Amino acid sequence: MSSNPTLAIGGLPANLDADILLELKETADKLCSPGKGFLAADESAGPWLRAGHSEAKKVPDNAENRAAYRSVCFTTPGLSANISGVILHTETLYQENADGVALVDLIKGQGMIPGIKLDKGYAKDKGLAGTKIGPLGHQETFCRGIDDLQKRAADAYARGARFAKWRNVLQIDPAQGLPSDLAIQEACTNLARYAAICQSERLVPIVEPEIVPNGNHDIFACAAATERVLAAQFKALSDANVYLEGCVLKPNMVKNGLEGPQATSEEIATLTVQALKRTVPPAVPGIFFLSGEMPLDMDNEEAASINLSTMNAMFPNLPWHLSFSFGKALQKTTIVTWAKGVNAGDDVAATNAAAQKALLNRSAANSQAVLGKYVAGSCASVGTDGNIVQAAGPY
Ligand code: 13P
Image 1 (tube, rainbow, N blue to C red):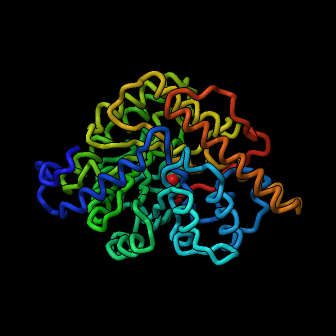
Image 2: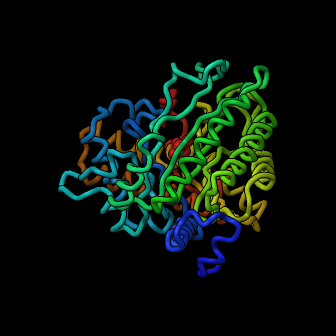
């Protein structure tokens, strides 16, 4: 884009000052640096509870342990070669490590950009009126947090955050007509409102309308739902006067349901890229996939790296940076390595170093995947032994 702010505004109403547009674009471009993606470290509870592993479950979920684990991740030497931005929970943005150093400073010190999760999640038992119960076992939902968002966004910026995330959840059940038009409209309008507010506070919004994989549908049902949702999402962003060059998308990959017929990574890559081409304007600089829940007999880290790499290998000239914003699929081996050491009472420095090595390895694997060059099996992972059902629901 031009660094001329008048040209940057184009057909948008001049609702943002020119210097804000330039800052948003600059941040978004840095987040989309070649070969880089996000570490999604914004889990509400201890990240190890989401990992879905028997060993991890034994670590007490308290603020001290969360800070300890996350400090280990954020101080991984060399991590910024593969990670541009780290998404934080509010607790972490304002948290210090045992030595009194702000965690946000650890991230900045490593040359990575801190971000903040701003949605306040959803209530499983207070869904959208009249909607059906989907495969997650609850009605279709909406996320809370818009009311005080302006202030929380301004505060997060003052504390060092430069981008934000908001995740809305949609479910697939073709027989019941899920996702419903109502749920799509609510999710997309709400995300557009959030995105506009973030931009007014100089935060690049990650727009995340996640369609969860729960259910027994095939990949084509997911393709249809993803295309409907993304088309609605970009209409809503346009209606809300969101500056597309200063925001990024975090979608699900197009896949079969957890209990549906298994699609190949080539099918996943083809249908995912097709859905994106049909719906996401080239003005959007980057698309960063979530990894999502996977079947217990699947190595989620390896599968996510392979799927992303297949997309970039099959479709090398896409208009967007096609990358990762993985939580579970970036941290699984790291968490299990760390948790095993903690549970066994091993030397702390050795445990931390081993966990950091795992994080660096998987982030490098995903960096290769962004370039379409990940070699399947070349990154060690804990595999599927010890897998248990992970914590689900609001992130
Ligand atoms: P995953 O753990 O599924 O990669 O999700 C990351 C995330 O940030 C979801 O909002």
